[in-house]
Length: 71
Image (cartoon, rainbow, N blue to C red; front, side):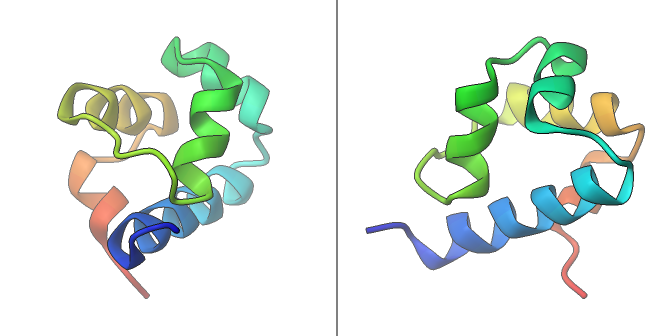
């Protein structure tokens, strides 16, 4: 079962990704991460590392802190 914090992080990542019109595959290519890893983060089953948080932020062209903001 996924942790609620991981689920919230993953959901927010998905919202940011979709707002930019990117597929998981496209985000993975830009961030140099596997699509299945992106999927796992978004489903809350992967505990993403700090270095990968920065990779995702750069790929989405947002500050890393934006990945933690909830609306």
